[in-house]
Length: 352
Ligand SMILES: Cc1cc2nc3c(=O)[nH]c(=O)nc-3n(C[C@H](O)[C@H](O)[C@H](O)COP(=O)(O)OP(=O)(O)OC[C@H]3O[C@@H](n4cnc5c(N)ncnc54)[C@H](O)[C@@H]3O)c2cc1C
Image (cartoon, rainbow, N blue to C red; front, top):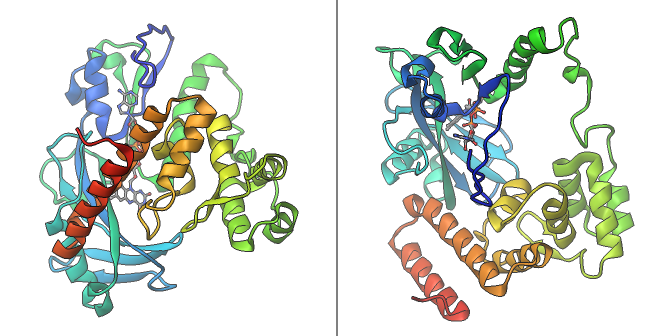
């Protein structure tokens, strides 16, 4: 096994191994010497387009040109439209939306929500569903059920693959897998995870009280509680005790310096991209223009990285975000992006 962060190779021994790698499932099985067909799925690519604000307070469903259901939904501080579902044969580590997919979605939504055509798209998401394999049906008709494969029949005793499923059913799926292992490892012990609150979910925190305690805006406190539950109190401690930790770094979301320091110290975030995934920093209307560099500095301070490494992180995040915007921007905005990147390069001295 190779650890992505350190590149170190290690060998682990275990009685049981569970392959829970989604659309990569067949590839992971193949790494273990099991034929990829033994963990077969039918990968289905889907994309979403993100808009800069909540365009509606309601989810709206529309029929696309081929009769599929597509939707517009308010989500967090933005809106998304989605989704496509197409067989995917490409590189799973490099999945991006295309402008054709974006046009397909916009066309469908515009039938019931015409102003989508003038709304400001700020990015895209693309992913691949680990749909259970079947030959013949169209993508939408494929089963969204989940399946546990015991690879003992393939000569790999103790190796299991978890195939298919939905986010909506992930807990049930995990329980079924854990119960299967618990049958041998601790017979007679019943699953209790459904009775134990998730970390931060122990009780409800009043965001207005927190806002007063840490002298931040009610909106910032509310978002903090939404993301961290009771752990917002621990972030409040950093905000109170460390100078400037109360400063808002990402105004779109908003995200404070204390929250960035907390997720680096306690939640394994090692880069701007990690902080963004955990806090939504840089994913709002400004595309990270106002917060990325400062966030990279804070991550570098916490992890004792050099200024060069800090700049590299900021640049990587800008480029990653720009790639998600490409399919939704027109020529004028594309020129502005190029200008912005040139500015960044001259600021950081990164032009090679
Ligand atoms: C566009 C789209 C829309 C969707 N909409 C919905 C919806 O509305 N509702 C719903 O319930 N579900 C939805 N889904 C489905 C849902 O996202 C998936 O079913 C779910 O993410 C599958 O979870 P998973 O953990 O099996 O796989 P993933 O979430 O794909 O996680 C697999 C992980 O394994 C990692 N990995 C791969 N190979 C290795 C390796 N060799 N070693 C270590 N790690 C590895 C990958 O990096 C990845 O992080 C949607 C999916 C897509 C793409």
